[in-house]
Amino acid sequence: MGFILVNYVLLSPLLFLWGLFITPLSIGLANRYRILDHPGGRKIHTMVTPRGAGIVFWLGFLLWALFAAESIPVLPALTLGVSVVFFSGYWDDMKALNPFGRFLAHLASAGLFLLFVPMPMGHALVCLFWITGMTNAYNFIDGANGLCLLMFIATSCILALMGGGPLFIPMACLASGILPWNFPRAKTFLGDGGTTPLGYLLSSLFIYTVAPRMPSIPFLTLPFLLLLIGGIPVWDTLFAIVRRLWSGYSPFHPDRGHIHHRLMDSGLSPFWTVMILTGLQIVVVRLGVFLFTPYAP
Image 1 (cartoon, rainbow, N blue to C red):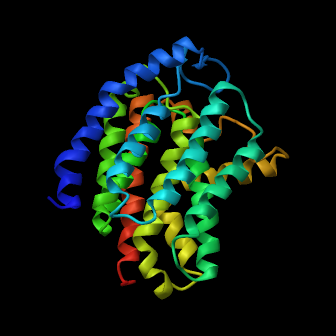
Image 2 (tube, one colour):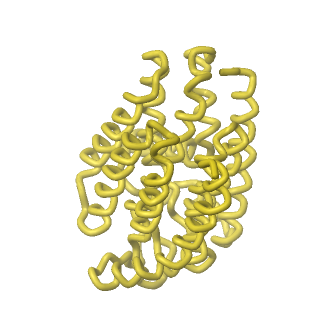
């Protein structure tokens, strides 16, 4: 049986079940080691909630990579990169790390992956900062139950249409298994150890999928296309950076100015905030995929 058939028929359902049934174990682990998210400040939850469910996603990806490594040559570099991203985030969930140090770890992880993806140097530089930005953007957007996971699942399903189904569908199934524990009522949070690997994997797998097209994409067109593929998390992060710098704060300074905060502050419920933003994400990413279409490999 070929890898693609095994990937769809066996691995993807198993990854869904992994997320569904292993996440409770991560909840127990978080409670035991006091990896907890306390309410207050800009946070919208009202109860102490265990975080650290990202370990379920990371381990699920590693299990999938064991089966996929022979069919996807870039996986060893990608696995190392996502592991660096995961450990820097998971450690931050337990004990706060310097934001700039975490950013450098994300940048190094993106650079490591791109060493194994041939493309023009200028395009690679753009992709380096886009992957790093996506890694942080999915962390910044994680301000409402299920928002980060639904953004990841919806985007993965759309990007599967570009020929990346064997890469994106298993990851969407894995995230879907974790989703019931995080949405609509959060029994656990992903934590930085979960949100940052989501952004890193989504962006890296996309770049790997479209790498053969890169030489035909004009250099100045590429950033615009990637901004569309990044969708709401990237745009929200860009506005947050500009807003914080304009106010004299660090780009990593937390605030309550994100788009999901603004929608909820206007009276929208957290549930409908997540639904509306996920719908907008689908529209924006679908537009990005449409604009990528003319650039044949």
